[in-house]
Image (cartoon, rainbow over all chains, first blue to last red; front, side, top):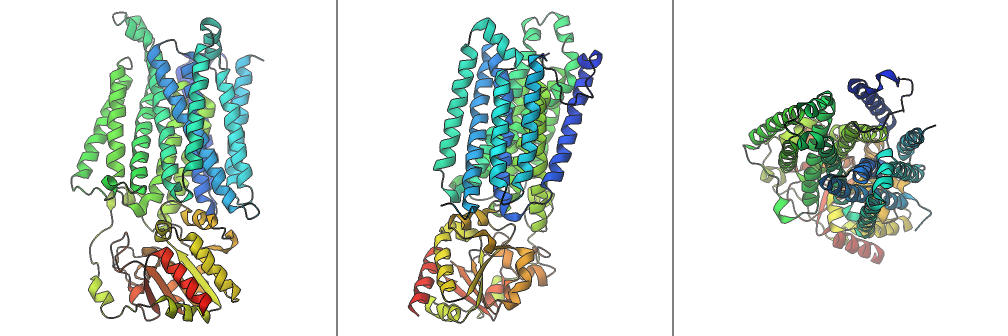
Length: 115
Length: 484
């Protein structure tokens, strides 16, 4: 197992059970469902003209998978795994940087002072 | 505090920044700040990832080679992404976002594939040793997450690629794929993915099963997106965006990383909400968009609707109508984006405003090929966003509007949605331009819009048709107005 421990829900983390995979899975599931809930609540009321920047901004954030790609590519000893991870880093970084820059370009156009 | 605790704290800070970024993105004045905060959160998370224990361990044992390679890969990705984002013309934003989205999905599938390779290395090296396999058994939950990451990632990548090809109007993808057997093909593919997910969970050491799942998912991504018509693209892009978030969240389960789970589910949730908003705006169910295509029953014959009633007008005639107008509402549609007429529209509005006329823009929620497409397009031409009015806001003002100018829009102004309960678009909220005193429709021909139905608006008594390319039409109209 990877040695990462998960500490965000500190209250849920109890040392003796931390090695039980089911406990770790349910801890991740808790985080997942709570974050989904936050996502629903935050996005509920969005003005229509911001739909495009919001779509592309959230698109950039979905490139967070770069974090996973970096850990995998930076830590694996086997050739194939590293190669897959490195390709993942390239694609995810295109997503991240492209996403934030495109969003910035779009939002700049809504700014009446600039240009 | 151990170094792992610091890393997790950094992930927590990044997660909070993402949530605040989303919150700020929902307001027009705070959105730019929101985007910066999102980027800052991403930077923190990426730096923390480089300090993860397995990365540092590798650094100590095998030198900086791996980390340097990661740095090079990240730099390549960053430069390519930035170039794409800066070079691509603003009018092509929908396909740009689709493409970037697809890369994120593919990256998640690769991460899960690499992690699976790593986890099962021992079991594969000693196939005869049952204890190596036994060590994998408590791993079932994570095998499910791995399989789902591969599947969703593959569907996202190929679905986004098809969406890109459709929006870019590549000839091979221009027409929707309407093979009558497509539902059976999709069903067969879906069953195959279920079997393969079971296979990955039962035999995680058989890496081939995972890649087979990715391949079937890739085909499914194509066959699910190809039948969807261009006008439904806003819905598809939102949905694919949601998928890419869910793929990242699933990858978070695989490598047990909270920041992936949190950021991924935020994106997944926001994409789902936007998808629901889009569907609502079209009065269609998500299932209808994804699998339906519009019904073709009871479509009025175009000849009966238009026969002898369509009045065509020249630029000079329309300029005369505009000269007497005190309130004009411009209704942009996808045709405006195709004709690249946004700057011409701005000039026409300037000419009208110089004559003391009020000009506003009515934006239908699904005008264009992506949510908010028209807003971005008009903003590019420096049209102040206070003048862009949403549908519910502007509909009551049409009876007091002297002239409504419809440019390249069709189904979203079709009064049949309101009046004909048998129409395929019955009940879809529309812009009530037919209630304006005069309606000018700039369009190349009487050809139907995406719904494939004739538009009684074009034959209405108060409608003048102006048959021309959108940009040329508006330029001629502005010239005629300034001459008069």
